[in-house]
Length: 507
Image 1 (cartoon, rainbow, N blue to C red):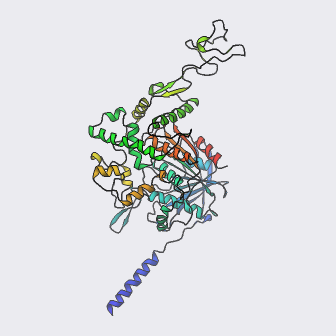
Image 2: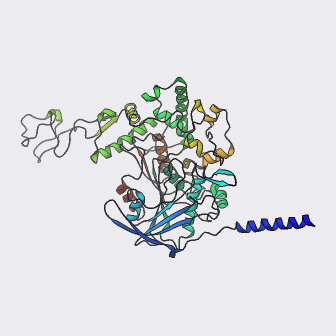
Image 3: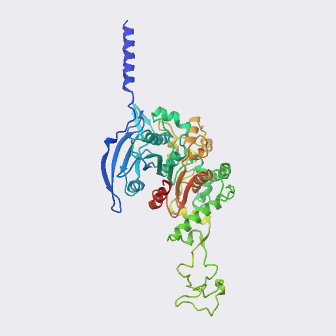
């Protein structure tokens, strides 16, 4: 009898404990907003209403990160676009913060957009569960948090000021990768089981546009792209023989990967391993020329070639026939102070004659210039853990487990380290690569994209951003892409340009 009573008591305790675990439903109270303001660098005072500590899942594992803040500028309505800014860097955890006058968050509020800053778990976020320290944010947890935040905005779209059908995401580096993932994985069913377990709202999670600054993405192909691009630079040639062999192995994989993507150039011809370097060169020349036309100084010492003269002399005041520069007649009377074209010091009316157009780029010289501004990463750069004695990268931690492990996440690296690639790691790697979902008929990919990678950014290779932009263009998406001249690994620059683009797409 005593045993029966003890069993009944234990059962009641379990039921009571379960009752205490009943999760509070998602909520939003429009009356809880707090009015505040901040000053932009230009002196503009921006007034807004803040809604903070909005938990976007019912099953909160990590209360430090799994909530977001919403900032509604004066004059916003239900039709105002929403700018969602993530501050993820290095695939680390990120707390929900407030608007910053010097970046896109403050600019968004100043431009009249509703600002959302979600927190998210990351590869080093932890909680104590009993005596155990549990890592809460290993892949794909940060992405799941961001998708849950989007679902929350849709769930309360009728009461939260702002239009959940006009969500524009923004992030830099790993945050740029997350912005790309939010844009590329909308409503894909692969994530549903995880979001359901978290207690995310049963809503759509596609977005209207993604702004991606220097996205560190396509991680399972990042090493091969890096060594294909930078493996022949002078700094790589000075490494040990074992490192040289790794570089050759990785670089050799890249052409096959490019060929497997089936990408097309703007003229409809195939983009292949054979013509890819020239494709990069033409993009860099195009964007450098644009910067030069805007007044940037572009030296010829880093690989660029320039035209030295125009091809012919234009008529002046209607009184001169067009002649080749080397055939200017001696008897032509020129305006006072102007020398004949082709002579030292000669100029075109109204502009420079020397260096006006970029005609070519020596990629070997240019890549060595990029490397001279900041040393390259190690070999391998991304899936490095245990390969030829290399330490783990942040990405090795990103794909580790909740005990804090580092793991290899590519077939190539696991072969080098005599480890295995589990099905769980394979699925996590797949879910964290936007390239896998663009063109997928189960996914609603964002229609608008703004992608930037710095022209001297070596944190990942140029092909990573180029492939993302090209695949999106090939699938009919609106893509505004640049290899931004002289930019290092950075984001939220040229904000007038960015918000001019946003203004255009939200009309």
